[in-house]
Image (cartoon, rainbow over all chains, first blue to last red; front, side, top):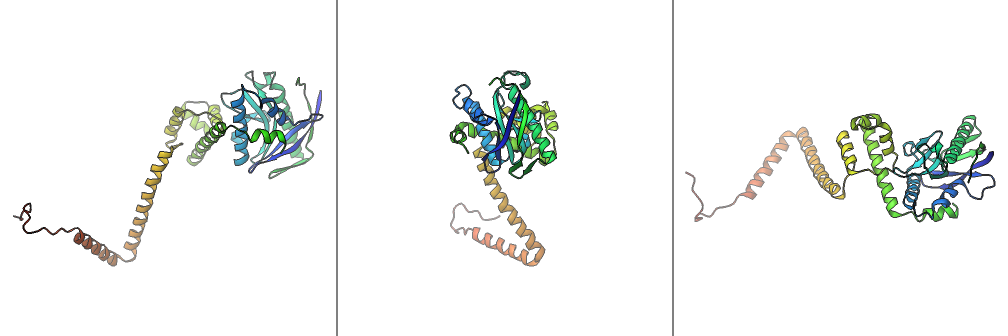
Length: 159
Length: 149
């Protein structure tokens, strides 16, 4: 199945501008879906708060490369000793594209039924984004992403 | 900013914020020391007998460092990573004294270089003044006073 989407501006913090991924016919962005999925979770309350605090800190101080765990062409904001993952694409110290996330239940994200598809989606989006920057369809300048940020990916997802 | 974002980011647990800020600060400090010493993450990992991937995780910013791990890193790097408020206060006090002494030394050297004789005279005058000030006149009838032999 093909999924159509677009990368849109989301939030400006002092050091970083956050963009998010919207899929066609979806009410919320992928990042908002992540927030909605965990905002009332008692089990993952602490981990969820740590991820939000990490996003806030990164937003205030800068999205340095070493803060992100490389996940193929995408990245993850991980919490050590936790299974909660948020997938994203770090573009530069000033730009991050936030995706969706979930609980990783397998050793490799690819093998996990929960986060596997999300991990794969972010990988594909990151590949398309990098290619578009390379061929000039998308321009990255300071805290802004401009140009044709739409994309099409192949994905089968249950949720 | 939409409502979902606002709702979620205005209510971040303070404990989580404090933990993340400290964890990132420690990671940044280790990174700064490594850069200053011209060392790589791999070299640090080898010195600690750890995998490079583990050190890389530490520097990502949400690692829950134990005091033992911090002590080991400090030992290997030969520098402190984290100071308590008391240690900071002690360092500040020490630093203030160091500044005082270094300023005094600088003035001393400057005086010696610019006008040696005048400087010596000035020091001698100060010594005399100090001696005079510190001199105690002993009464002649002091029972504890021993005449020099």
